[in-house]
Image (tube, rainbow, N blue to C red; front, side, top):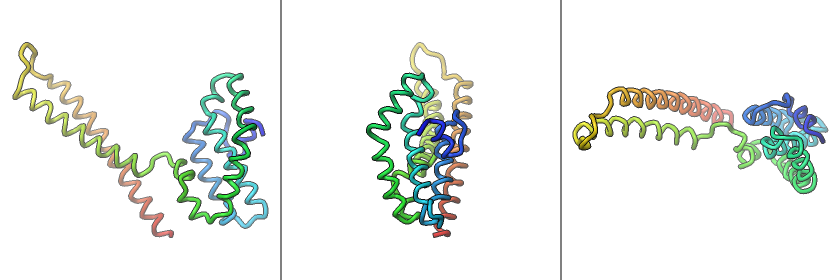
Length: 186
């Protein structure tokens, strides 16, 4: 297969980002998984979709760099990884869709997972705490020869921490809601 074939299988333009590739794969994998799709060619479609996804993710940087790197990536793919990718996809096609969704392979297609969201939420809280604590600590314990800490810098760091906190909180709430919906469906 060629590069354009892989993009065509996922229904994407050739200038797609990694996030777009992941999103398209998740959508197509759900539609074509043999456990859900009763079509006789569902297994073959699922294998092709998984192969296309693996190639595009593994070689995304090489594809966009230059022609020689792309040609080398295609040759390496055909020699070493294409067969392995097809065998792994065949195994995933034999399992139920629920089991497939719980595999590490499928979980890597998520753009934001729970661990990342919770980690960013904790970091945003730490930024706020250290900004406030650091400013008041410097007020009480000035460094000889230096001016008092800048109120402008304190306010800017506080605003940055608040923006980070709000964004993290929104993503955390959205993740909790989607987790609840997934549990209800099961």
